[in-house]
Length: 116
Image (cartoon, rainbow, N blue to C red; front, side, top):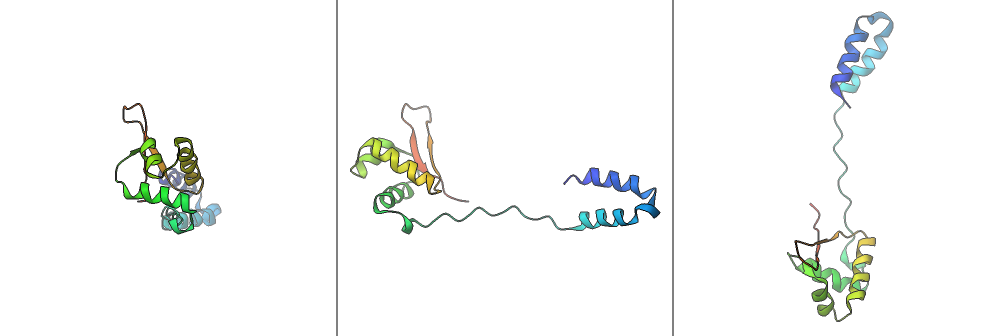
């Protein structure tokens, strides 16, 4: 809400106060209302609700504070690169924020973005 516009309207309406008293009071009340804080980010689903394969991928990503190549992920989970891409896609569908950064490299680095 733009406070300047409301004050300008109030000033214009204040000149004809008798006919517009109700409207003026409503606008002043609107200005006095506290501002609602932005909605807090929804809590991420706990990793306990994941299947065993997705849980392993989630735990591996959560344990790293830096990005990991997809080949490293696949090797650590004993699966193929295409399977690891599918697991990352499934984690994203479930609401986890798995990001990848290229960082000027040929292969992106995947990491789990923490809330907050």
